[in-house]
Amino acid sequence: MIGYTTIGVKDLDAAKKFYTELFDAEVLVDVGRLAMIGKSIEEPKIAVCTPFNEEAPSVGNGSMVAFPGGSRKGAEDLYHKAIALGATCDGEPGTRIENVFYGAYVKDLDGNKLCFFDFS
Image 1: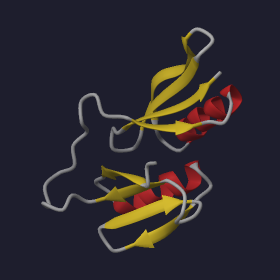
Image 2: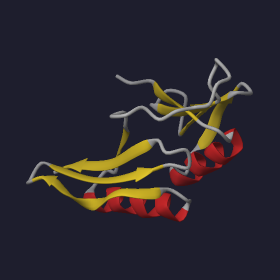
Image 3: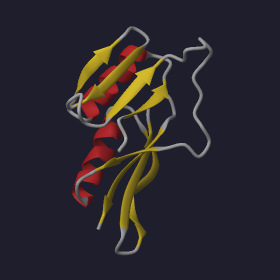
């Protein structure tokens, strides 16, 4: 159902590098101040941009973008890859809801909160 999620960033080039490497993806659309990153234009994407109003980007309190890991190991692998790419830990991988939800949390280079998860 979701086509893409957009987050504001300070350094567009650094954000493009972070997300393309994190997801082994590519920049599918690049219009200068906004880039859409993903595996294909038909699949959900993450868009990174400098804010339209030209003010500093800010992180929403309670906002988070969640990415399926495909498995618990996949969620852990994305978490560790994000950390290696410069993200900071915001919740180590682990079970959050017994026998239902497994999650790992980071903040990207700009402080945007990301979750890598598995329902199992």
